Amino acid sequence: MTPLLQPTRYSPAAGGAPSGTRRYPDSGRFVWHDLMTTDVRRAVDYYGAFLGWTTEVVEVGPMGSYTMVRVGDTAIGGMVQLDPAQGIASHWLSYLAVDDVDAACALAPEAGGQVAYPPTDLPEVGRFAVLEDASGALWSPLRMLEPAPAPAWPIPTGHFCWEELVTPNVLSATAFYADVVGWGVRGRELAQAEPDWLWTNGGGHAGASMMAMPAAADAQPFWLPYVLVDDVRLAAASVARLGGTVVRPPDDVPEVGTFTVTRDPMGAPLALICLADGE
Image (cartoon, rainbow, N blue to C red; front, top):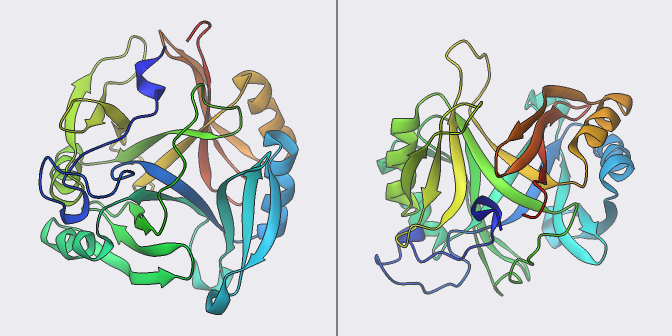
């Protein structure tokens, strides 16, 4: 099986837990994704058409309504309406489980980041915040009241399966996530592709990756989620037909599979991947 995509559980110093301990079983694992978008209605139609996602509007108390995203009976994320007048670009927000949200928020400024949204309780869900890392990439530490279900293996089609940090400064990112989440990092070379880095826990298990943003790129650093599909080339063709954009054409990664990077009609980046035969 492809080691890069196997579901792993971590025992880092995530969010202030003592090194080598784990109070919360999901610590260090990405467990949820929200599409922050300028047009929820169009996003519902777009992602439903080519990924088969279904949605349901639910009420979340004082925070108003929320569009839940499902694959079959499994909830995998949601969609949140942005106010276009605020000038915030559409993007995916990845939620990383931590032992202590408040501790993560206290550590972030010391590591060169900042708190973009303070620790907040979500009724019947848990506690979350939004942080910027040292280069400005957004992510959300989350402590759920009940641990998320263990990731299925093999990963079902249509589910999120990987995360990659795209950043101009891999050194500051390495230091930031070591201090705030307790991750280590090791480099790797991929044939016919750019070198990248794997985030690891103390046991050396990989759970995410990092890629250096080209120096000439005019973009905000970001976490890029990957969704598993059956056929990347077919999915990429659907993206263009449905009003999205293929940013990086389908490309084969030896011993891993084929991937592409896209933007939806509102501009949010999302990667798609299918695994190599037999993986």
